[in-house]
Image (tube, rainbow, N blue to C red; front, side, top):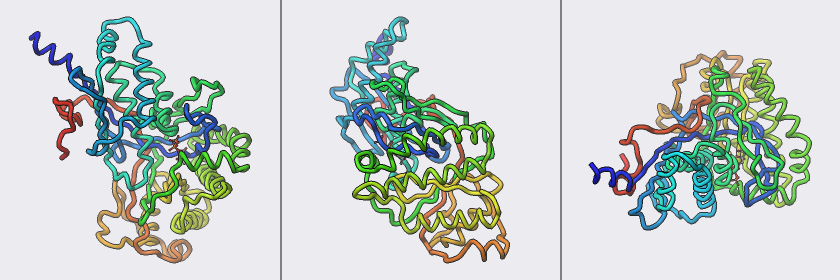
Length: 404
Ligand code: DP6
């Protein structure tokens, strides 16, 4: 028994999952690049982990000789400054918690090296904000390992700004904060995912994406050169944030959708206002934007709303009763190149017969093969602990398990 206890003490492990989030009031620009403090507050919807999630296992053992990190099965640089900032901050919080026996055990663990393995259940190449889910998951797993519970969004923020919003489910605000040390720049839940059960999300993954300008570098150039971004942060966002909170509280899709589209467009306008300019939208993104507006115009109100981050994939918000019809509109507008059965993934989508007037008004010039697939999802919860030890990504030897 003693030997077993000793062996147990020698290796501690925790596994968590964390979600992707999509901003409807965008974060773009830092006032402090080291602490990752934004120039404006932002607001996002956390997407469901049944469709998109990162899983991370963190282990500590006195037998480990160095910190190590594996991403999607390949060893990665654990010395990356943002990974190191998260490690350092979780450990600092663990030391701050003094008292009970549990804490004492954690203090023992704190002197051990860690091994971390992380994987996404979606292709990284799909450009689906994997860094937000990745850092949220890293911080969640480390926090579990060391028994830390509070202030975690501030730690995730040090990994990637948008990652702090993935520490909560549902509708989440990242308040910019005022203090220079960043202690008030944190994420807060505006409403849980159960608040708006009819809300759905369609991710239109576009084909032939080439690597865009990384957001970290792009937003710094914007801060330095775009007068529009300065106006946006000082004047536009504070007003919009209050409006958006109200639309969410009232489950007002018209207001929510209109504002989400306008804010996405203004973010991309600040990219064009950056010098030299940055382009994240491409011809296909513009095609999807025009399609959404034709569709809404045909129905006489806002049925779908698009938003785009630092890449050309479109994220579409709609209410559940619109999904079947709009997916058919997308299928007709971007006829799948091959194996059309994989065209729609995620939550089930029913078939829809499109009225002739709708097709005539909305499906103008089809572009075959332009959309690779559609992922149907909805708002979901924040990071989750994985209880089942068979789900750990690291084996008893502390090395990545063979992937299924
Ligand atoms: C366009 O969070 O990736 O997705 O803080 O430098 O890691 P860093 O940037 P990141 O930027 C995300 C920008 C965005 C808008 C948003 O998610 O709010």
